[in-house]
Image 1 (tube, rainbow, N blue to C red):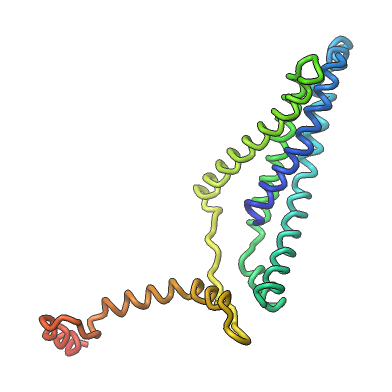
Image 2 (image 1 turned 180 degrees about the horizontal axis):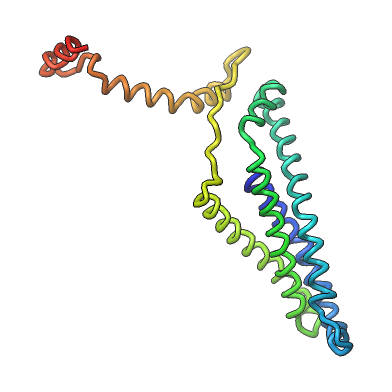
Length: 230
């Protein structure tokens, strides 16, 4: 959540809210010929209209990503303690064991990049807007669609880069939770999922061990020789 979903969900929400607002504002200025007036006075529309919006999103998106990560951790605590009957101490220990500062750092950096992309998409569609009221609505819709598509593609590129650079670390496998009280179906399923890799590796090791007697009668001599060698 800290590495992927926090930044992506925040960026999608900001694309629907802020990206559309940027496109509508600049589109309205385009309809009222305010952008043409800036050009007439020799002022750059990029410096006065696009750059401040981009800096604002670059500064706010990392903070919103941190806020989203904290909300996700609290939501996981509600589910784990309230529904799965885990203790608060156990949930905190497992969360600390599963997360690292690298996860938060990657998510915050992705949030800043997503902020740049959202600002570019919204401002570009707003400046490209036509001279009618319907064109403003089309510019806002196009800004949202463009922002979401660019966010998804960029997130995939980040996933490939982090895998190539070795930043992606598989989570450490923790011990199964202690079961107290009656065995409910959800607890039985949780323990079975947690212990399944250990059980499969143990069964494969037992089946290939030379100390276990084979089921076929033709290999009793080989099994006896193996025991003698051991």
